[in-house]
Structures are given as C-alpha cells and as structure tokens.
Image (cartoon, rainbow, N blue to C red; front, side, top):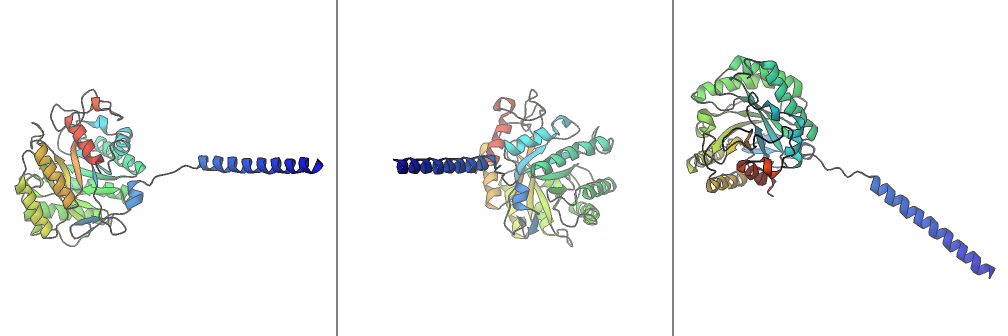
Length: 332
C-alpha cells in the first residue's frame, strides 16, 4: 500500500513540474513581440543600375505610394498620423512631400514654414520605415534657391537611406539644355554632402519629354533617375512609347506623379487607360506615386473636406480617386 502511495505521490509531483514548465514556456512565448521589418529595413539603401531601382542586395525594387498636395494649400495633412495611415492602412512604401515653391506661403515667401511642413513628413516616414521624396514642387527654374534648400536637406538627412531628392517637379517651358544645366548644379550641391541617396531629375514639358533626356542624360553621377508624369485620360500610348524609348536607351524612370483623370486634375477617371499605365509600370519595374493628398474640389484630390487631418480614414472620407489609389497600392 505504501508503495502505491509513494508512486502516486511521485507521479503527481512530476506532473506538477511538467505543467509548471509548459506554463512557463507558454508565458515566455506570449511575452515575445513579433516585429515585422519595415520597408527600409527590408530593402536598405537604394541604388540605380541601368534602368532599374535596386535594394542593397541588388534586387529590383518597385515603390508605390502617394504624394501630398502642395504644402502651402494643404498643410493640415502634413503630419505624422497621416503618414502612419498611409503606411499601416494603405501599405504605401513611399510618400512624397510636395513643397510648393512659388505661391503664397511657398518656399520663396516663407521658407521656415515650408521646411517645417516637409520635415514633419520626412521625419514621420523615417519613423515608420518607408521611403520619402523631398519634392521641390515648382514649374520655374530657381537654381540659387534650390541649391540652398537641398544643401539644408542633404545635411539633415544624408545618413538616412529613406530619403529621395526630387529637384524639379515639372519643368514647363524650359528646354532640356536649361533643365540639365540646372540639374547639374543642384546635384553637385547635394553630392557634396550626400554621396549616394537617389536623386530624381525633372524632364521638360511637365515631365513628358523623357525621349529627349534619354539622348543626353546627366553624366558623372551615380543613382540618378528621371521623372515621367502622366494623367491617364490625357496621356495615352504616345507617352508610354516615349517611356519605352527612354528605357531602351538605359534611362532609369521614376513616375513621381500620376493620376487617372485629365491633366487638369479634373474630369472623369479613365479606368481603361489607368490600368494600361499600371500594367506598363509593373512590366517595366517602375516605381510610382499618385497625386494627391488634398481635399480640393477636383477629381485628383483623394479626400473629402470633411476628412480628418490626422488620417485613420474610412471609405466615407475618401473620394473615388482615393479609393482607387489605395486599392491599387494594396493589390498584390
């Protein structure tokens, strides 16, 4: 009888030990925080090889995201919470801070306010681990001012692989000779401080004459790309043909602004042409950024005036274009 009692006691003792061990392991497992790598942690420092954007392992990278509207008219969206929504809800891998240069409250008239708006977005993008474009959003050549601004940005962000410099949004009437000369001055100023982060160079005629750029690109610098902008209802196969020519010449393209309606930013969305552009960009591994995070009464503005400044938007806060862009970015 004593033997049975002892055996039972030992059995119960070891059973309790086993339960405690399992409970401890379970507790330890539950205490572990599973962290997902950010996009920048995944891809690291970007570079350019031929016509392709590459990550630090030499693999092709395609970034997708949204452009904030002109900061001088829609500063309310230039904040960390809005960036967080684009990262966590829309799954953006890049955002673009479009710093207006020429209008009232633009950089020329109010450089401090302009820089503060841009840095809020850039700092938030760094925090959330995505890439961010610092966009000199102008249609006119202002070499001296651009050099000063980008020197300041390069000094502040040279150690962050997140940052991409877009040195001229959309040249309108300037020739490629003039745009190229301007670009070389600004690139030189950036490269004296930041040796390797990506620089985006504008193309003449609202970033459409990439075929001219392809015949005479900027030389002497690495990690330079060239911007192509399209509005699908206005720009059809002719512009894709120009893009194809540029790619055939080895010109690396980056679509830093695009949308599905007319070039005015208004009118109906041309879904057929928009899809042709989306497919073309995918086929050529081209990164793209959609215009724009704003609440203006026009088709290309993604948000309704009633939408919060701080993100966390539902479908009821988004206009048709906002829903279209969000779904296109999230589509695998």
